[in-house]
Image (cartoon, rainbow, N blue to C red; front, side, top):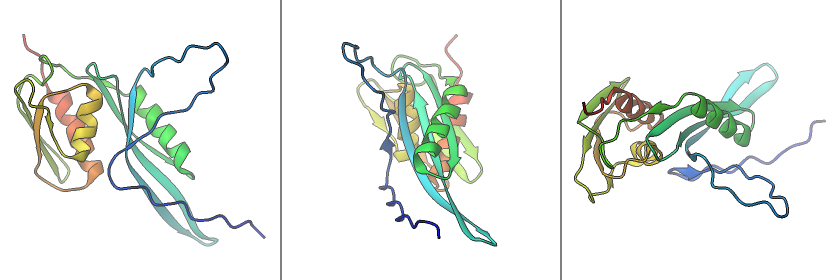
Length: 175
């Protein structure tokens, strides 16, 4: 008979910070990670099969270098760690460059993506990030320091992350 495993704990609400651990060899200098990585959402999904329920996980991740490059990825796997790793790899391979004007964005942008609608506006220096969880995760790893935003449509995290990513794609730099 198959060995029974305990159910994995439900992830905490909000955004998780995930960093891959590397083995440090004696005398090796610890280097700073190239990208800032965040896990926005982990979902447990179940599929009915004739042998019972087939459980797997999806992980929505955001990766950025805090210098204007950002990517999002959705990883799917039988376990959480592999799903997060797959999401991170996809995000790193599909990054975009965001035009920045100082520490903010060059102009207002409003994007509708499915049921999600996101409004991003440049903010004066020193005002900080005024953004909800999913939008904040994307713009933080992109390196945007001053921004005002509003989620106008659905409250679905995945849709809002994708809408924010599309909004950042639509930005045009100053000429």
